Image (cartoon, rainbow, N blue to C red; front, top):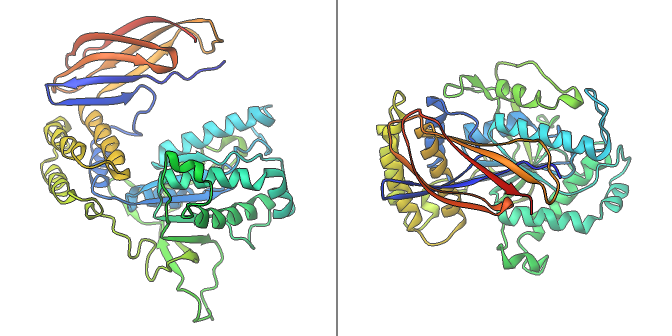
Length: 422
């Protein structure tokens, strides 16, 4: 069994904080402008889910804009892993190609700042019709998985890359058909009710199609208005436009030869209304993206405003005490989706501001059940803020140890262990 070991560390910072972080889930940047971007994102409570059929179907410019421009929680749901596609860089086919393209998608998301989900459908090559695709995919099974993702992710807006009539490939058309069905089913307590033991029903505000050739002239006045967004906008915090960032993200699809050169300048994208409440001017019309969505959120919003004012790009660690206060205030809120999400974001910001680096290294790249893995857990605190490590555990290896280690500024600490693969 090939393993990518993920280690949760429990860290205690001077008597006031317990922070869970993971050795393999580092933010896509630690620089001062990225930290400022994430501080701004802490004030935004909104989400968007982009849906298409394959790895490389996603509009990376749109994902980059949503995640970094609108600063909403953003994810791409690929219904397949692309195992039926081509491979221009190696000999992998079938499941091995699906594994390769999965990693390409994850690499792309680390660049554009979005998250990644998979729908569990089989990519069986080119399909001429949606009917053929839905039959081979087991429509109800894929739909159930999509509904589960929507209920857990709770998107305010769902965007499809294809429509039910435009997309050519049967997989493309099916992704739009299933998105419409999932939009309705996610809000229906009678559909896939077994999921409701761990999630709640969720009503998405609107479903739109990210159309590529919209009819902008002689448009039927009875239709909902066509919404447009400029994805060529320059973002000073990124030092590039969303189109430029998208070129870097899309170039991760190496097996498909989809590398692209950056494009600069204004670039409008259009959105056709599909379901839900039509937007009048922009995608998030009538959706509250502030802390007003949460009871008791006004206090937290004020704390984040203070964090923005006091942030020092020359010394991000001075923000940690304010972040600890924010964490304490969020922790005191009643259980909710946004409580969990913003706690995660706050913990990530604390890690970023401390320059904290954690990783795990094994003495081999692959193991099978019963093997003994020799591992090294590496930790380094690159700030003057004191951090004490109280425990380290690897749940997948049933490894757990208590320790008391103060991480001195920029001084690496290495913990060695032997773990049996259970």
